[in-house]
Image (cartoon, rainbow, N blue to C red):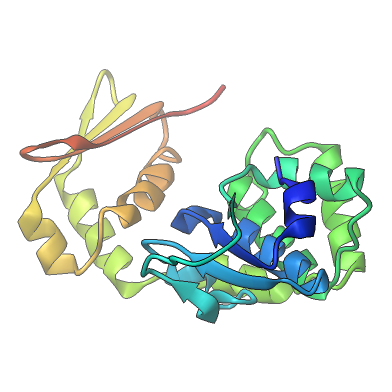
Amino acid sequence: MIPLKKIENARHIVLVCEKEYFPQASILYSYLLTLHKKVSLFSLVSDSRYSFLPWYDKLRSNEIISFDIKVDANVEILELFDFFKKHNIKINKKIATAFYAGFLERYENFLDPKGDGTLFAILSELLASGAEQKLCISALQQRIPLSRFRLQSIIYKKFLLKKNAQLVYVCLNDADFEASGASWDEVYFIAKELLNLVNVQQVLIKKSNEKNKIINLIKEV
């Protein structure tokens, strides 16, 4: 997963990540610094919700030309944790905090039914390593953009219940996003909340005239 042998011989390493994988990129950035490597962090789009994590201010959106190797940080958070344990990589406070944030997001505030005893054992270990739990919860659970509330209000007014109230259907347009100031990314969070409505088993949200703008969530049993 992480090319340790190539990293060992490299002087300048570029970490590449998609915005939702920034916690993993933060983890790897901290680790590479302990190896005394020069590190650059590249992502075309950033997510300001992660601005509390170490090295967020190092993100660059312009292409990095000169480097020795490029490392893809788009890996599952549990796989990355297992990698650290397998190779006996020390987890310091910065790394522990980024891991905690990654697990918090991956397991949907630890409400995902896939979270088991193994997950909570990992979290306990991260807390013992100095993970800033309150900071992660405050940034990722309690700070909701006003734009999302506006879009949520629009969606709640427009949604239709179908299939005996088991399906929530919503069709959005450009005017809805202009009025709320929200982006399409916010729709996913609202769709997950709609799954909590009584009897609802599926949420289907579309953006008119854009076939690729579709969110279809089905409740796991």
